[in-house]
Length: 130
Image 1 (spheres, rainbow, N blue to C red):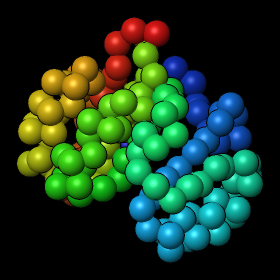
Image 2: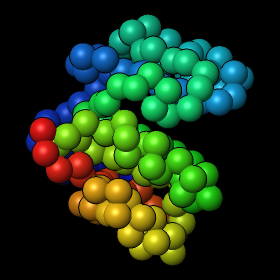
Image 3: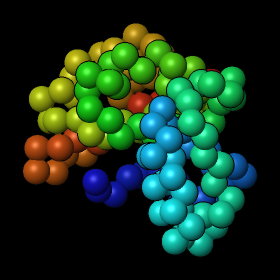
Image 4: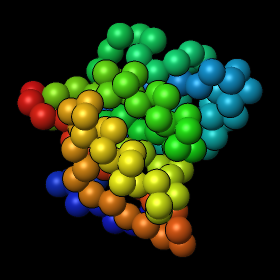
């Protein structure tokens, strides 16, 4: 949505591993087609399933879903964030940020940044520790 204060630019091409999941097989098919349009996209692993289904943790976890779905999935998403990592949430309306941030904070992911554009919000939450 806007510029983030990352110390360095991150991309699928420079990441050790990029994985994505969705419960909808059609969404996985479309994501695969789109990923192949980008440099390094062939290395992205996509699977049909729920967050946390692999038992792995990641430095960056991104979820672009509406607040109702995010609220239900937040505990599983939090479990996917490695110590010192970030959870980025988008698909939120500006008025939903505070309640979602409070829930994330209770799961050990305090709000670090928020960006709002035309009523839509994107937030970054940080997991303590390494």
